[in-house]
Image (cartoon, rainbow, N blue to C red; front, side):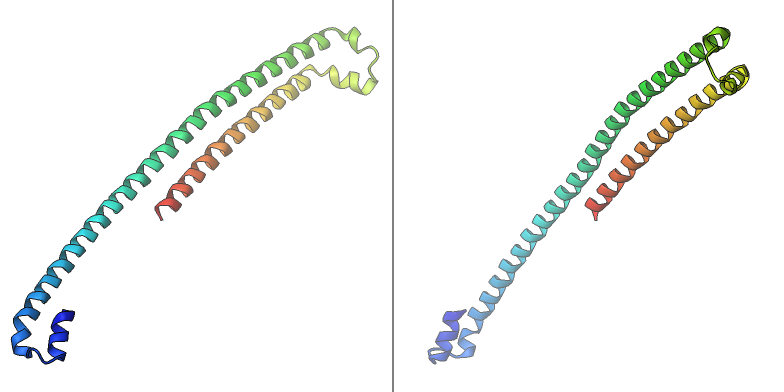
Length: 161
């Protein structure tokens, strides 16, 4: 096109003489531009699809990791519940032995002796302590599950955005 412009400026050719060349160059330019556009659109679609695949795979990977965390944590919380059950059982056994052997309380102050002689109250206290521990364990497990799932959802959503 620059050569055509130079010919026209140098008065070597008229616009009418250069018109077929200009039309050919315009068509060639449009063809090249269209091919470039097609190539860019193709590249954009590939990039979009790969990004989409990556986001989906990221979501799947994060879900698998959180699932693994939940599995491990459920085992840990189960062990914690089991240990709490053993602890409560030992408290019941020890309290039963202590209440059954009043001689062991001989040195205790009268107020403590009076409280310790109310077997039902003491057993209820141990049972209540066990219930409180179990609720605490359940609450911590729920908190972990909720926070982990919320974190994953926020992370995946942020990545998608």
